[in-house]
Amino acid sequence: MSPRTGIAKSELVAQTLEREIREGRVGHGDLLESEVGLMRRFSVSRNTVRKGLEILSRQGLITTRTGIGSFVTYDGTTIDSNLGWTVALSHGGGEVTTRLLRLDRGGSGRADRALGTAADYLHVDRLRFCTATKTGISLERSRLPWREGYGDVIGAGLAEGSLNRSLADLGLFAAKGQETVSVIPALPESDATIMERPFGAPMLRLERVTRCADGSVLEYVDSILDPARFGLRIDF
Image (cartoon, rainbow, N blue to C red; front, top):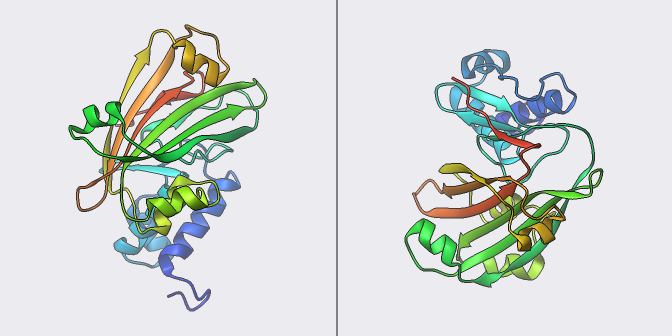
């Protein structure tokens, strides 16, 4: 615990870096200080630094790649789904709101095929909508293999509107994952209607599987993304 604040040192690290990010002192896409640099700056252990970075990652403010570092993904609006290496690229302003389209339990053929199993899932479908352009910029269909406690999520709704927060309240966190980005040559009419976008427009598709520390699948998500707002970024 930090004697100055009465909070865990990892939380102090996270709060300090969060403030710098939100105030613009660390820009979108910028590389944060190295773990060694943060250890020296805050006079804490490497494990404490990593816990602090994990907090920022869960908040959608940074993304980390082993051997490279942590990059700022916050760009005025935090995108709750933590898209990993898919970084929101801001081209023009406009408030982004989230519409919850579905929150229930059921099967999913697409998730079954992706995961090689058959199961019931917690279904969470969300539309990110830009009020300036009056179009959806992402349509995310999350499928989480059913676990004890998900019934309460359906009954009470997402905690503060956040799936990540709901999972954290259940003690569930993503430890690793894999994602694949592809192109949708023509947006299907059904999805175009939901997103209020032109039928047949080219879009990006992101499929992502995240796992808990024990290797169990936490979430499979299939997202349709506006290519003007999202892109794949790899730093090497």
